Image (tube, rainbow, N blue to C red; front, top):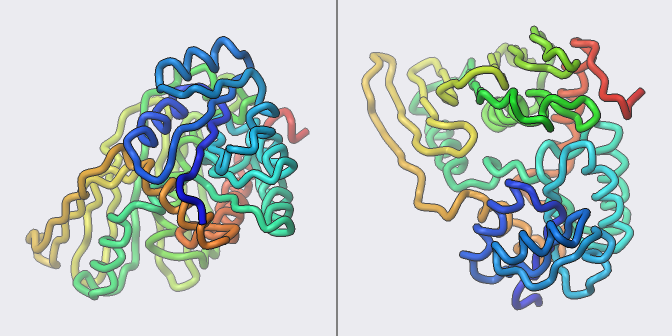
Length: 327
């Protein structure tokens, strides 16, 4: 059994930094190595986060036999090639969301990983958070009755970020922001989506700037979802039942859950437990999976990752939006 898991990070951007800071405060896992496209950038990242093994190429990190788990923190457009390279080196991995740029890439990578028996999972952190278990317990108790509608929004004014404006980097609101409300709806209402309706405002560069999405489920339930890289929103999630409703504060990193009855009276309140950053839960899930010999994490099975990628492909088809590498 692994006594301590050595984590190697591909990519030295902001999200990689957040992961490094988190892992440095965890036990049972060590931030062992960093790789960037230049050794200088890797060494600068390593110095900032106390990482001694710094590599100027991804291949060098993957060739390091002491790396037990790889965290892919590169742009969406690079996930497929990075994940394929990890599999060639037999490295288990935690791949940042959105998992891949499209369902075709997702199917290929998951098939390879399953054939090789190598762990791969998507870093959709809300799936791994303890607050999700609390939400499920509230809903399963029947206190708000039969859930028939969900709403969720995630909007940040991030239109100035070059990566998000670039079609070649699989930019746009959907893969960065819209993926959260979609996952939230799926966590509450399940997988039986019958029909998808949407509207979109495009960014001048050709990526989606903001969108409204309505998911119609086979049982008659609906999810009404919004995402934008133009504005700031409250990031709330609403879960509406026949006897009451639940308000979830911050669907991007659950902060609290408030339960109301049919008279709009507050009947329960749950605050999120203290955490390092929230990233620790997905890392802990990977560590457990490695120790158990699993090739996927039960919190986010491969089938669900693929289903949501297909759903996002459907949305982009509705918008007639392709990334250049899909032509």
